[in-house]
Length: 408
Length: 140
Image 1 (tube, one colour):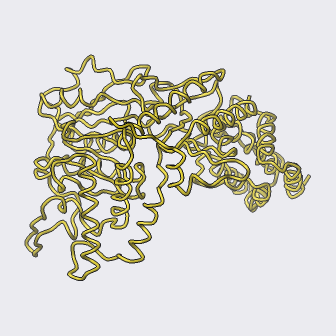
Image 2 (cartoon, helix red, strand yellow):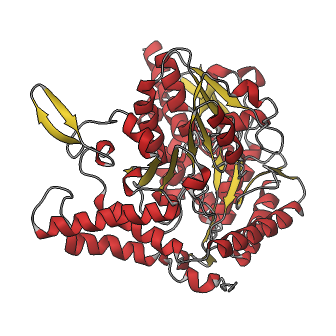
Image 3 (tube, chains in turn green, yellow):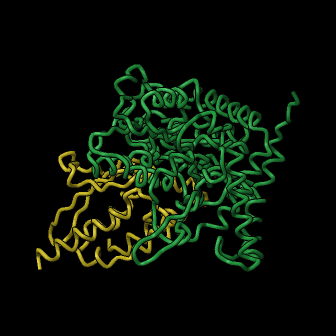
């Protein structure tokens, strides 16, 4: 097998924002869990769209509209290949992961009735908790949670109590956004299938780190955000199995999602348009297609290996600092580290890191149940992407040590 | 010392530091020196909750002036609380209500007052003005 050399320095040149500095300091971007930076090809593509191609999709006979529609639909094909979905029309464009989950909660939710059960986990981001709580409240459903252990892993010992023939939907994250744990979704999908439950996987923190094959996973839904995988903000993907999506009612009413409308009623359009009411984020979707093609052109294995190197290195360097406590210590982790230093407040540490040109996230990371489990208000989270380097980790450690000296 | 004199003093104290890290060092120092709020007043009613940090603010009315004490769980936020308490405490209600906080901008700390920072400082300023207004109405 040919080993592709992973050249991080040349890769960094593709990202204009990585080449800025803050005064005399370099700018170290370790907030990739929140959003990724964008390669030049994506930025250029957005400009090209507005410069030369802007027109609405699926409506015009004129040439611009056809070009715009072709490019928009090409993105759908790219995403299908990326996820290895069976059909293009199983790819629904959304505004992001949150939007995708809400679409499923609202639409699939109409098919649930009192007493039905939904299973999520304690590790979920608020956007994969609150829509289900709202649905459970509206329809008198039972919401269950997979508990976690001290390493930040699911406890599946009592899985037979968690998944029963009442379980209609399981919605879980592929990777935890606050701890980095790679969850054994394969296991939960297998168990869920035995009871006929549908399974939604939140891939917001997974898709940019390793290869995802939705047919191999055999999940019913897979959602992610475009902006975390080098694409424009305001874009996202909901993958749904054809049979499941076909059985669901539309989410929002409007243009594009209809076949015919009369005063007495409406005939809905087919997939994927049934779920894409109104003018979509055309430029964003086209930019997302370019982002994903760019990402697919890089060897996924090499990316995973590089990111794991960064994780191991940062873990080792952080552990040398007195008073550091790392949250999320599973053997299977993506490249992010959540930590606290002694009793220093994350806000203080984050503020002083920012002053030195290091971007990290502090707080509860929209996972208050996880913070509650550990009995802490929040953590400092450094999350790495394929373009980060060991030299940046060194600078981060140096800046962190200075912050600790100042605050102690 | 009048409010405007206190403002000038604060701006001058910060002006000697060129480097932002040194300014933060000074904020931390001010935070450490802040006369703590009486533990009896560190109650839920006095909490101003930011998304990222928590601030406590207590106020009493004494001889026509509002006396503030405060605290915060994050030391930098505590330093910001110290700056605001030093300027606005022991002032007449109208002076507090009408203060535009220009001195905070002059020091260069206005970014901490942004509603998007969610550190509770902006909410604290609002609360200080609310207290001042409350005392003014009650004693009118």
